[in-house]
Amino acid sequence: MRSLETLLFWLMMVAGAAALAPCLILPAWLEHQAQLERRLAAQAYAAALQFRVDTVQKQIEHLRNDPAYVMRLAQQEFGHGIDASKSETILIEPSPDEGIVGPPAQAASADPNNPDEIIPELSAFLEQAIQRYPHAYFFVHSGTRPMLMATGGVLMLTAVLLLGRAGARK
Image 1 (cartoon, rainbow, N blue to C red):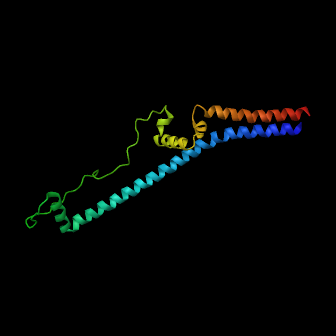
Image 2 (image 1 turned 180 degrees about the vertical axis):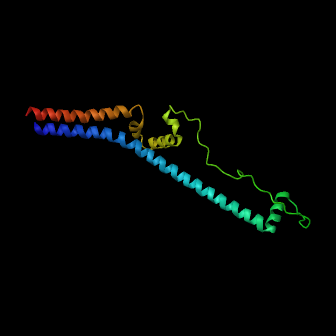
Image 3 (image 1 turned 45 degrees about the horizontal axis):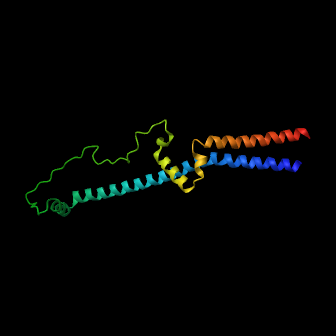
């Protein structure tokens, strides 16, 4: 009889842990994966901006130091040759905010009461993960997750209480 009680205890503990562990670990892991994707996207954006800065700096350098480049650019823009013998160089200072490129626009109309709209990238990532692993939906969804956590906790608590009673009887 004691071996049956031990088997029941461990079955209840394993079932409780199997229900509780994914509810605790899976949301944090999915959020971590979304953060990694967001970080890679930010790095790609920064690399694209750096490439653009390098390109513009080269163009500025050519505009300052290469009259042939300026003539080719003018001919390309206006479609015919320009007589530069009577031309005069005029320096134009750019305004302080000219040429500043900002990050991509974020969703500013997020509803703070709706957790799916707070971080749209995280919601999109969760949707992809749930499509890839359909059973993950039960451990992440706000409607089923508390119920699974309660079930796992109750199973584990019941196992401990039954083990205590069984030990007290003998």
